[in-house]
Length: 353
Image: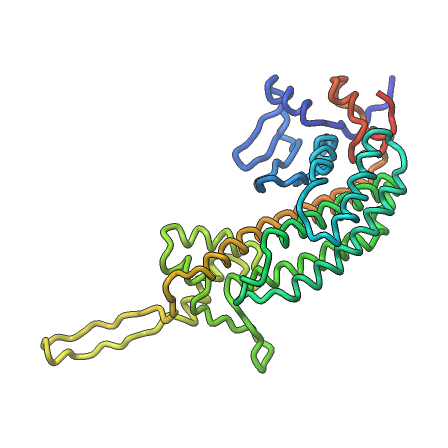
């Protein structure tokens, strides 16, 4: 009798068949379970328009390993060849895409793909730093928002290619790599800083405490004049390190901007005016510069979502690197499973179909 494997390897097609056949079930909180109640896959809650990177590559849940088919991801990355970015970065970007295309077509020169993506990421890293440091959130007319976002998006794609190729080469030793994690954390910090200042400018006082005046900020616009403003604030503060939650934000507003107007006697009308509270936040008329701030902040929100996805994938690859591939069995003999030539798992990557 053959030894029972510890893990079952699943693809998207296996999950779809399992859902239709009743073996798996999907829950409203985006969990897919089998008939015994064990988690098969966490589905992504975030949907970023035109994003080519998945929110998850591989997940280990109980005795299941879910792996995404990465071929469509590679195809989508190759399609970004002609994206408009700053001229001095186009050459490096094209070199990575050409190397990725060669790898897709021939499944060789993986070291070259890894080397070119690392080289390109270093050039992008410096260019991104210089450009972001030069942004004045109060004078966005000098900022080419479209090209800035395209540059950040291309940079994150290159980091993703470097991360995946590093895993394919080094397998479980991917955890030894410090470059990808550092680059991800660095771009996250720089983008988040601008994002936060767009929402509400802040500074440190003499006691090193963060002060946020809130006057004429995007937060005050959403809070005071937008119909669904509170819901939008709840979404935006996900990537604002200054607030831990909507409750934290509302407590801050109440603590710092609610002004108590004491009761007094109105002699003219001969009546006692009751005590009341007012919000002491200044808000000017809607302006062109404010519209540009809103546009830029929404785009940077999506960039931060993408950074979070890459962080998650980085963690997933480190975790799967601890798995003994001899303990994995193929869940089904479906064509989709047989055809997985470009995947997160080297065993499937290098096995012939």
